Length: 199
Image (cartoon, rainbow, N blue to C red; front, side, top):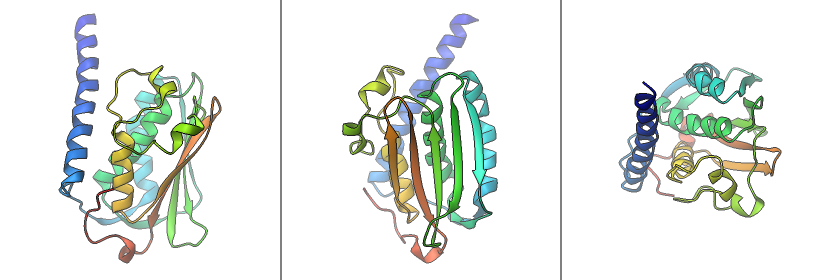
C-alpha cells in the first residue's frame, strides 16, 4: 500500500510537469483555445477553494476568501481555473505550518477591472528573482529547497492566461514574510483581446 501511494504521488507530480509542458507548447502555437462566457467571479473562486481545500489541509494551511463585492464578468472558466489554481497551489506549498492563504477580489481603482489577490504567509521571493518569475523554466532558489520537482512553467502559463483575458499580473513579496500575487480582469468584454497572445 505504501509503495502504491508513493508511486501515485510521483505519477501526479510527473503529470503536472507534462501538463505544464503541453500548455506552454499550445500557448506558443496560439492554440490554447479559449471559451469566454459571463460568470460570477466570487462564486467561481468559492468553488475553486473547495477543490483545493484537501491540499491546504495536507500542508496545514488555512484558506480564507475575502470578496468586497459581487462582480460578474467574462472569462474562460477552465483557463482561469488553471491560472488561479496554480497561484493558490504555490501559496499553499511554499507556506509554513499553520500559515494562511487569503484570496481577495475587489474592483480596481478605475472600476474598469476586477482585481484578484492571492496572499500567503510563506517563504517569500528574493527581490532579485521577482523580475524573472514569469519567464519559462525559472524557479527561485529558495523555493527549490521546499520542492525539488517542478517545471518552472506554471507562472509563465499563468501570465499568458491573464494577458489573454486582457488583464495584467504582478507580485509583491518580502523574504520570510510572504507573497501577494495580483491580477486584473476587465469588466468590459471589449477590452479582451480578439486573438491569443504569445508573451
